Length: 263
Image (cartoon, rainbow, N blue to C red; front, side, top):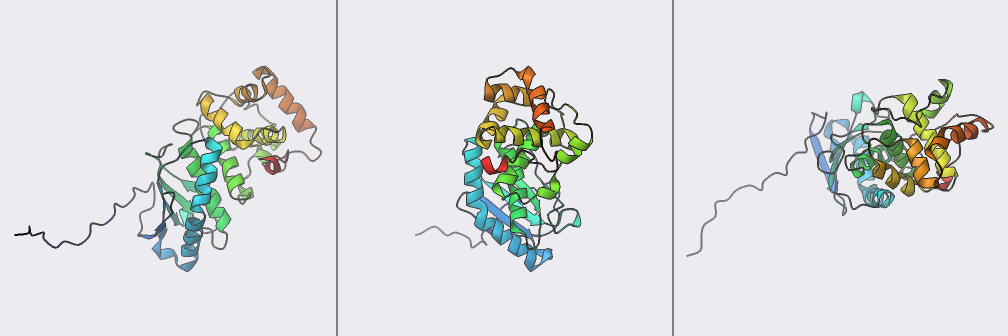
């Protein structure tokens, strides 16, 4: 006689442990590369369109991120919602830890009508997972993640620029030291301009990213310069200062050396 199995409803999928979102998340779908996209169901059709656009782009974003860091990433969950009440992308993005295990629940701000901004915010957090516990939470890692977001999103987050603030504040030296926070605009701005300079010298973003991860939390931009160029780390700040001083228009964007076109 065949065994009898009780009739039970299918088990619901586990709800991701979102860092801050506490509403009702609606599943939009899962990409072939393992990105599962949700949306705050209270936000309506424009947020749903953001989520659908993110899902459609997810495999390409993952492929670009994997290539930048020379990794095979893991599955992640991402929700589109109004972070801080914003629906224009200015609410930013966040996640928990800095790897694909502890940081794989990602939150990104909705940006109604601007899918590339959502894509950029997603890549900013995905790139930090790819750092595998290094750099994330430091000024160097924040600058790198913002550069990854710029490249992957076709530079859709220019309003997040910090390099002009660094320049206007007297250009403090965050090349020879690293700020151990990702919330300081001046140290992040120095990093953005410095990476722009390295890109303009022919160093690819993938080379920069992999070298930075290898240097780890204690690495400086000066050490990065030495690794990429073979020159002394002690020359990095003075050479960078000279390059900034030679800019015809000064530092007005996060990419004052037009490195984006060479990334």
